Length: 145
Image (tube, rainbow, N blue to C red):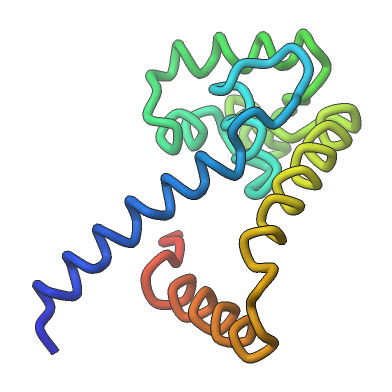
């Protein structure tokens, strides 16, 4: 197996993932939030609870900018902050009920677009896609704790 060739295929794949993700989430109607705030809420939705540092690192933002965006989201009652029970200095972020409802609506729109993408896939194709995603998640995109 030529690992260099595999790497180039992976780079192409990840670029395509970013492009398709952008297309799937583009113009998702979410009231009064910026695209950056949507990305933050999306990350919180799939990873909660998270720390401000984790959000900062994932979104490639400075911690002060992340804190500012989180404050705006909290003012809109879309997120909740709470302290770690053992280390009061550590804060966690989760979606509020209102934020969760909003993200469920956004995900429903994204899901509809995704289903259009795969509308002509056979049952065998869908099984292959699911298997490929499972392998990528386990072997490449696994989180290091």
